[in-house]
Every structure is written in C-alpha cells, then in structure tokens.
Length: 167
Image (cartoon, rainbow, N blue to C red):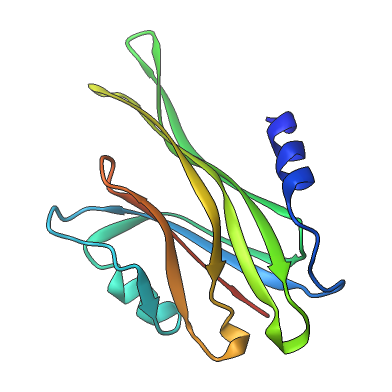
C-alpha cells in the first residue's frame, strides 16, 4: 500500500500554484433501486446533490480541507465479518491523487487514482479495481455548484462523485 501511495505522489504533476488549497469532497453511492440511474453531472448545492441520489444509498462521504497539488486522498470503508470460519469483506477502498493546473483564476483541479470494490461473502465473490483517470472536478468557487461522477461500476451499482470547494 505504501509503495502505491508513493508512486501516486511521484507521478502526480506538480504544476499548480503554491499555496492554492481546496477542500476535496468525495462521495460513494450504491444504487438501491434497480431502476435508479446515476447522472454524470449533478448541479446544485450539497442538499440538492443528496436529494438527487434518492434511489441509492450513501456508502461514504469524505471532506478533506487544505488539499494542495500532489496530495493523495484516501477513503476506506469496509465491513469485515466471520463467515463460517472465512473472512467476509464488503467495502470500498480508494486512493486518489489531487492535482491542480493553471494559474490564478484559471486554476483547474483534477482527481484520479484507484478504487477497489470488494464484496466477498454471503454468496458474492466480487473484487473489482477501477482505474479512475485524472478527471476535471468542478470548483464551487468558480461559479459552478455541483458534483461530477468520476466513475461507475455497473456490476456492483457503485458510483463515485467529487467536487472541490474553499470550505
């Protein structure tokens, strides 16, 4: 794990403006309603975003303040249990590289990395690795309130969303 985090930090472009900090907001949802479809972009404030996700359940919500270019943001949520002497594991584990590009009012932010989805036990045997390419994420300080989907795994019904803010 440490080798992977080191690799992400080394490979991250260091082109941002020194001192440009943001809060990175990252959310993971799983469809609960079989007819629910995740939207690629969800405009609006946080309450609008959560309301739009009706038909899914939130698995994790991460808010990091003071993120700077090159930081690695991690999120892990798992339920581990003994399943007749074997380990059952249901969860999501992500390591995302946060980068900035541009200068002044033209700064853009990217988030990308690796997310693992594990659903082992209770008759399931899903182990999925999603490579999320660096994706432009909306910056609420630049006039767009909203969230963008980074990726979706249709087999598990799990989707990942993000934005950045100054709070």
